[in-house]
Image (cartoon, rainbow, N blue to C red; front, top):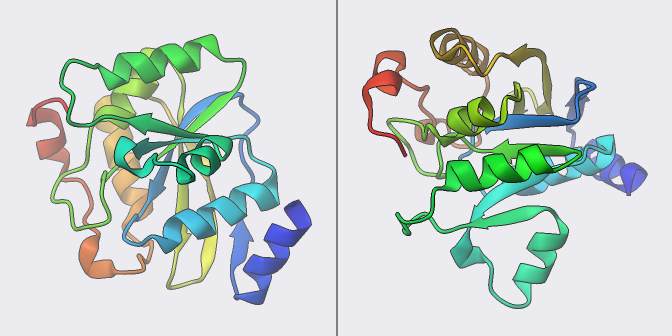
Length: 192
């Protein structure tokens, strides 16, 4: 699967960048997320690099037979409308109880323009006591990969500044749908 995925990306002109850090557990941000193509390109990259991963996906996508494929690919269904379920605690517990789990999350929470990012990724990383790794799909440069820097999930102010600094030069498929998190807003908004 590695060779096939690598060759598919190469045929379409994509360059694979970076290596996944030698850690067993993390929360991995995937941004910008403005297209369904992000999932396909990202999945090919993960297979090409042999990166063990999971991702959160809205539960509405889990219908038969697609649900079988999504679960096989490491997708975890999330009921965003059910306020009785604390997703942060649920996912953090899964990370703590697993031997290896790298959870990929699109911080915008949607492919549409989001004026603010969801904070769940930060709280999952913090509660699980795992680092935040940055991954990206840059349509301008046709590069897909992992950043060299690892973000400390215990330092919120510093973390968001580093994350914004990294993603400010990444080219989204639909740039009009990507907006960086407003740092001052991130700390004052209600918990998602």
